Amino acid sequence: MNHFDEQNNFLNVTAVNGKTEDVVKSINKYIDRHECKKMCIDISTFNIIDAAKISAICSAKHFSKYPFGSLQWVVNNKETRSIMKPFLPLTAQTTIKHAIIPNYAFS
Image (cartoon, rainbow, N blue to C red; front, side, top):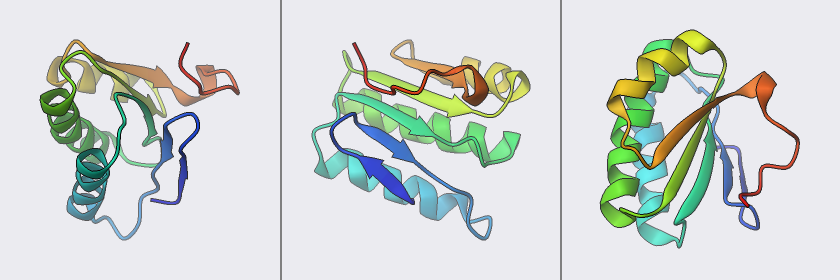
């Protein structure tokens, strides 16, 4: 993980050495240790398979802690978004990186 904006609960995750298991552990550890009922995570640097894996596992973790929370995944294209959708709980959404506005804060 490279950057976390605590004010807006925005986490920017980058692909490093193809270690998705380490990314999953880091995100889940963050969810365990912090108050993040509403959260946005940018995984747009990951390929379609790794993004689906990370989002499915971490969405389940977030949902188990915050069943009425909100989690938004930022991905790099429509294909990744469509692959992820069936594996996410209703409280999780996806956004394509080039379609998001500069202010990542939730309303």
